[in-house]
Image (cartoon, rainbow, N blue to C red; front, side):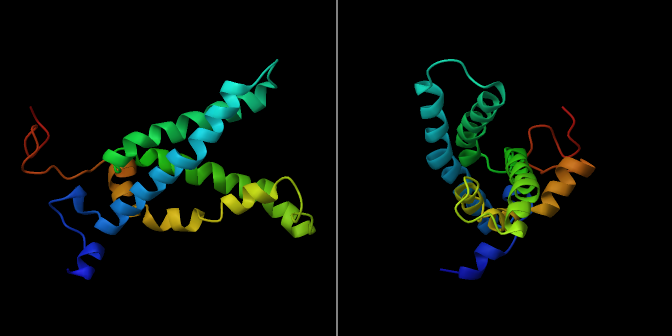
Length: 157
């Protein structure tokens, strides 16, 4: 087995994204699907009484985006915006909620501590995101057409 192959990009598969990044993305999609979705759906389905509107929005988002991660298992690059959302909201939460608590020395034992601990894998997510591909595809929009594309090499029908 060629271990180095996992770290080399292959222009014929996954638009040149390294296999290790594809499998890393799949791992994060799976973790979201297995750990976040069931908890959020359990809270939504078992809630009784009137919801606090912001709390309801948070639980609805937490139920939806990890459920969509199912599709990311099969097409990890197509569902990459889901990872941008995850990276974004967790980074914002860490900056505006966790960092001030940590700086004040009040994080330990607070209700924010378990959430902050669950976000510790965020740097790993940032490592598996194929930033070059993301730039080409979502920012510049100059995704190279593959020869075997049903739309032809120029994307024309």
